[in-house]
Amino acid sequence: MSQLRTRFAPSPTGYLHIGGLRTALYSYLYAKKNNGKFILRIEDTDRGRYVEGAVEVIYKTLHETGLNYDEGPDVGGDYGPYIQSERANEYMKYALQLVESGDAYYCFCDEERLASLPAVNGARRYDKHCLSLSAEEVKQRLARGDKFVIRQNMPTEGSTTYHDAVYGDITVENSELEDQILIKSDGMPTYNFANVIDDHLMGINCVMRGTEYLSSTPKYNLLYDAFGWERPMYIHMPPIMKDAQHKLSKRNGDASYEDLIAKGFLKDAIINYIALLGWSPKDDSEKMSFDELIEKFDVSGINKSPSIFDPLKLAWLNSLYIKEMTPEAFAEYASKWIDKCYLKNFDKALVCKLIQGRIETFAEIEDKLRFLVQFDDFDVALYDNQKQKTNADTAREVLPAVRDKFEKLTEWNNASLYAALLELVGELGVKNGKVLWPARIALTGLAATPGGASEIAELLGREETLRRLDKSICNLQ
RNA sequence: GGCUCCAUAGUCUAGCGGUCCAGGACGUUGGCCUCUCACGCCGAUAACAUGGGUUCGAGUCCCAUUGGAGUCACCA
Image: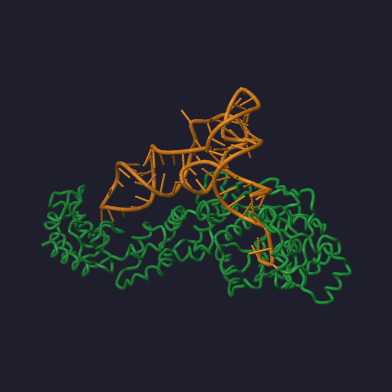
């Protein structure tokens, strides 16, 4: 068999949604796994839907996620142009070839007539009205400048079967197939037509796309047959759902790739997660690098039923990727979120050290660090802790001593602070918690913090630490 | 509504006739660890949609029912 060529053919409608990204991912993985080529083609035959800048978003996202295509509008290739609107003159030629062979025909029906067609089985169906027009009549109307479309002439009997790599054999009765429009009245090809022509012209021998095409694929195959072209292999994949009933879509306000990035998810985690939505490797691997994905990817692992997008599991994977970042990489990536917290005098490296292992998404940073710049009066009930045997009364006794120890320190770092705290524990002859708990509470006013008393004191610095202790001690009186 | 497809825990999934009183993961939860939280570690939790077949034997094959998805555009 000749070299495998897959393609991702999005239409530039403004963003790249998660489902589209996954389609691109699988296509890419499958191509790479088989030493094939992955091609990007922009399907912009609908002039009305064109969105400014949408193409760039597609390029950017694909490159950013590592889904580098071998051929495409911005990288070139031997089968260009890779933007359908730039190949506009190609399609009519092929449509006319089909008219010639009787596999397609001119149709002059207007909207009104179409709308008056009776519904069959709950849906309107074109009645092949114009198929019976004589060649002479067609010629006249064309010469007269009548608006027309070109329709595919579907067989009315028999059935068409094809093989899908994940769903198996799919058979559809030809009578179910409508005479779909190939060339629109504006002269542009419909997606269905341009798709087939371009796939063939670009040597695409493997078509990967969502299941929404599962039942219309026979129409495409009939086109391949009419031209005498070899049909490609098909790999349809199930949709990604928001919940059991609804597909994930930007229109419903669901997260797009950009949204997820903005919410603090790492691209590697996103790719890893969506690879797992609808596909699973032979072993039980969950966290996989891009290279491992290529290595393990296999069509037989693609699932048949829709899968629901689970932000919780994505977050879990994301936390795994966050933990393995180097401190430097983490600091750099996190800086944009840390900056939102208006931290001025705090050691960023120290801050990062405390939060890196404690967040699942970068968006949580703001909440986690708020206590650094905000220290309000708090309920002394926070000093209550059954397990540590502490309460406001014990805090009242311990805190002044803590303050005293801290003030005498010549070195201000976690080790010395912690040592000072333990020293006090020794002197008082109590459990660690009896000192550590109230100290942390007094410094933050929070039941849970991203660090222990000494770590937080180190971060706060001598001055702020003493100030907070004084304030808390005062509030206990 | 017609047609096509799908159906294992709350979610993602393994399973391709016996090795499954169903395995992994997220979540939830108990515990350990611990300067709180988090991490980590150990344990628990919960599923073969229903009903018929086929078979010595069915989560695995067939049929029906139910449920769900997709599709039926001069949108892609």
